[in-house]
Image (cartoon, rainbow, N blue to C red; front, side, top):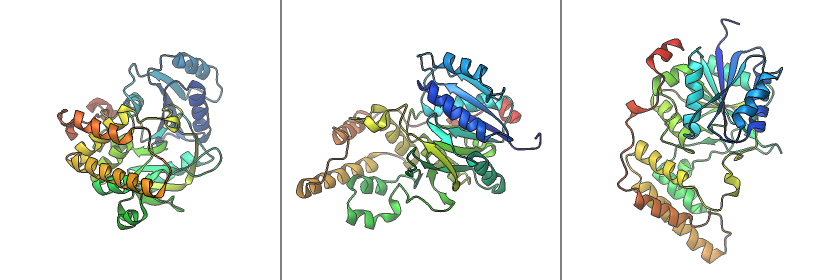
Amino acid sequence: MSDAPRLLTVILNWRTPEMTLRAAQAAAREMAGLNGRIVIVDNDSGDGSFDIMRDAIANAEWAAGRVEVIQSGHNGGFGAGNNVGIRHGAATGFDYVYILNSDAFPDEGSVELLLAHLTLNPDVGIAGSYIHGEDNAPHVTTFRFPTVWSELEGAARLGVISRLLKNHIVPLPIPDTSTRVDWLAGASMMIRREALVDIGLFDETFFLYFEETDLCLRAARAGWPSDYVRASEVTHIGSVSTGMKTWQRMPQYWFDSRLYYFRKNHGGAFAATLAHVTGTLLWKLCRLIGRKPRRDPNWFLWDLIRHYIRNIYTRAPRKRSETPTLSPRKEAEL
């Protein structure tokens, strides 16, 4: 066991303690026999989640001293909360870190398959699972990196435009076999330690959304590609903490993250925003003519334009050297 790869699983909780414990128990079951441990990070829920989970873990046979609950002390979002867990786990070292959503439950063999894939493919930095719902319906979790052209295609969603820009469509058809992709959804994602040391942790400027896109992009640019591992299957409910499925209007942090992503990685967001506005107007025109159903949240186009105008003079994105990293001491301990 001492020579086996060290696996750190990080599960971030925000006001879903019972579901987080269910995810941790599923992960612990799949990590049996592996050289691993689980850190649950309560992201400053303020609703008693920390005490509920701490007490449950203390009395759970399945935890068996391999599960720890810690407090972030501040809700900085998805990336910041996971960074707390990664830094905490670095104190005793790890070879791979497994990011698991609090509403995601690893199926049989899923964790071991991700670990085996990264072990057998030392050039790969990140590996992700096939995700399906509780009804076994597959979730789209493999993607191309967003570009100006993808903003046009994704907003217009019209056959002729999608055919012309087929190589820029962000969501990929669900692969039948393991394959290389640009980026993976963070619901079930395993990352190699060397990749994190090389590129840094999640960029904490993103509160929610685009943070795993940015991480995979930085990894790819540094020579650490991402692979989709079809045999690794995970059950995922989705949007439990965010309530995305019931959004009537896009939240401010989604627009913040999108703007920051394009400014940081594409030198600016004007062209991307113009492309999105153009695509949306085309869709609205076709909807008016063809009586197509409504699909965007209320006031989406207005909110997008207003957000961009209001943030024209916001500060420039952080430099790559300022991306959150592990301290030199803890990097050495990894």
